[in-house]
Image (cartoon, rainbow, N blue to C red; front, side):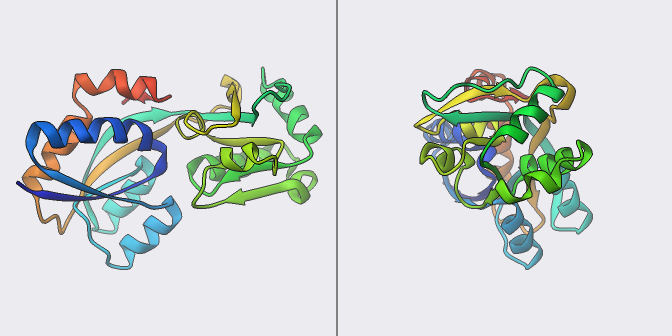
Amino acid sequence: MSEIKVMASAAFREAYLELVPQFERTTGNKVTTLWVPSVQMMSRLKGGETVDVVILSAASLDELIKAGIIGSRVDLATSGVGVAVRAGAPKPDISSGEALKRTVLAAKSIVYSTGPSGIYLAGLFQRMGITDQLEPKLRQVQGEPAGAVVARGEAEIGFQQVSELLPVPGIDLVGPLPPDVQQITTFSAGLHVSVKEPDAAKALIRFLTAPAAAPVIRKKGMEPA
């Protein structure tokens, strides 16, 4: 029996939490998981912290491969950015990029994360030319889902990966961003160059990318890669 240490981003969390216990039962291996916001994960890994498997956006994983920290990359799933409001609140119009622009300008308060979806949104608002107007009502959160802030009534509208919004109680998913401004992020797994249990770690990644995992990934708001 091996113990596999994983550092993972929250976007893949819901599918992972359903799949990993099945992996543990079928293999007898034990998986220990650290859930760390992407920004912190990068600094911790670059600072010398070691684990067996890292699950992160493909772009961030590529950066860690270039830095010689991660050996290789296996894509797990793709996810789009979603929009949420408090449960029962009227659903705003997000049918197009223009509609979304009107919606965020009209919103009293907006919350988004520090992860890939937050980085993309900051760039999107910049391209729309509305960053200065939104600045006073924008709130960025780290370490808790943007949806939780919306559920508490502390923000009118929230943005995060669809897979991270779905499990949050007290909110309604308005939908994914409209196709003309949607950003699809690939989440991937990589082996740390200092992996202690290479065979077990590879088996875990194979399990997460097996055909049997696909229905679980879809159910949790992502598409298998």
